[in-house]
Image (cartoon, rainbow, N blue to C red; front, top):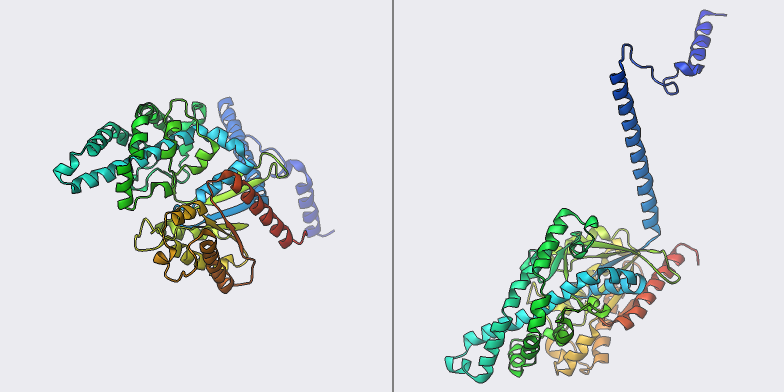
Length: 454
């Protein structure tokens, strides 16, 4: 046997011996190691093993979450500011996860109260502007004396508007929250589940609880809202509070009470603006879809935030595009732009986007209730939309705008796809329940068709 062959067999025997294999054998303790050093070495080894196990567990959990999300229903809500995106989201939660509403009811109580106070502030500001334009003799009429008394009585409510700054410090945005800020945590009573900052914020919110002052001001709020003079002033300034999101003045007698608890419909109607993009996750609680995951992304609709939409185009099952039928209103951020024309412009961009060529796009022509009230008030569509030449009724107006959206959908879509549209009033929870269930089922059916399952 050659020398090289003997060396090879010797080396193979050495590797086959487990005591000589560094990947199998336990490492030998360093020579001269005392008991303290050994304890430290063993502890370091145990810590390293625990860290490795945590990493493995995190990877397994991330993989499980990825698989769960892949099977979930993913929806993106698009549309301009105050188009009703958050309201549609709440209708999905109400239909599939009603316990969410029960758990968050106390948080929405404060939002509804702040919405009511905001409307009062709008009236008081309008009165201040009116009085600045009146002569001294005109300001001394009995009617205006009573309005000044009501103004003085209700002025303390304006200080409570600062509560919204605990949620978001941008007072120009109304009652608003920052995406991912966990604002509902401020209203929980279980301090074990709350961060230190949330507990401090809760203390501030409790200190400035508007409930006692609202209850004391209830009769004056009702009186100032029912004043014919106030209604005339608001009409002259084209302030239509009834058409704004978060309008609760007609419910003052019920809301301005110490025992007030928001109804489901109050929560759906409540207005809180989200700054940024926020993804909501919930699990269906009942019915045939029990246990199914929903991921619904609610994006900011103002012009300055629309660039943040693009990253969410990649992984969605459907896009719900909300276009309010507000043909007579202008954009808040740009009073020169008609809201409905802005919605059409956005719709064209979404339809022709190649990233969304295979996406299901569902159009909601929303706020049909506001359209009906506007037309009943005698507002002529042709005055705001010169191309409109049909009758001034809900059916004709809705058909006109539906056809315009349909035209761009057919003309601009990169590949042919079905035009799906719902005419909605998102604050009407009973009607919306049927709509969101129909939308959910249609999305699921299309996903099954695309997967060749049916």
